[in-house]
Length: 151
Ligand SMILES: [Zn+2]
Image (cartoon, rainbow, N blue to C red; front, side, top):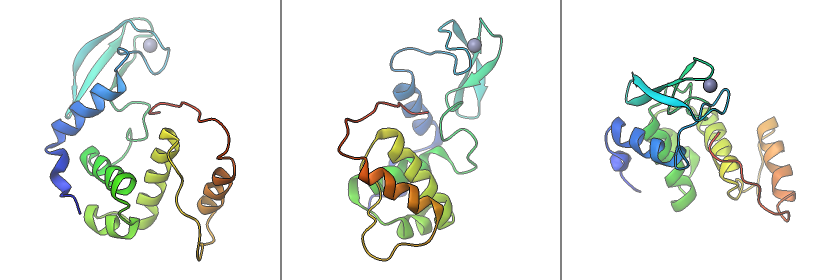
């Protein structure tokens, strides 16, 4: 098991998200303009002002992390542990203190965004719409990967 603080303080996680998300430059998630300027901060996250639509956004806006009460570093830890070390979601549920449903949904959505292999569906499968859609995804797998970025 990797330690939960592998992503350090909240600001380390925020820096990581910022680097990955804006690797091609900052653009407004609402109007796609690249005329955005730094505009204060939102907790650990950089805030921006779009000079075209006048709206503000931050590093998390438009990502699956946007409205989560769970700290970003906990999500990064969970996703990393799940994808790289095959840590079970049941185990992660205890590590980051969220419900199984919450962590299942988030990790699945993230894996989907990365187009990573889906959750393993062999063995007993819970009756849950979420498992059903994951199953369909597995059968579509022989197609070329789509690129969907972080959102
Ligand atoms: Zn805009």
